[in-house]
Image (cartoon, rainbow, N blue to C red; front, side, top):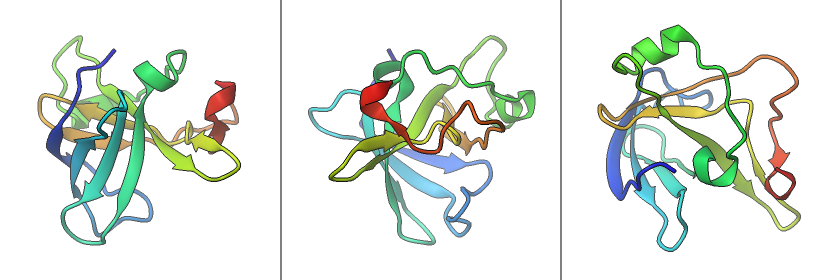
Length: 130
């Protein structure tokens, strides 16, 4: 299980789709919810997303991470990024986006949102069925 992040500035190597004007964010732990974070834009377009640590919420999820993404994160040889997924809550269900995980180098605080190909990674996977 990943180490907790309390209130950490992070920057995206490339802006997230739909948030092209925001690169700098704060990743904040949600009190009382291990592995749940709020990602809040600190510049550009105001935005807040809720993220779930896959090690806590989707432990079997192990998406392929391209070498170029690992290089952009400035990971050392053998280091693995923390993998987070966007969480969406509605009255009917809580879903996670397995098609576009966010990978984070916790040492450099650089992150990237990947967009995975294929149908095995749904855009809205019901969290209760994972």
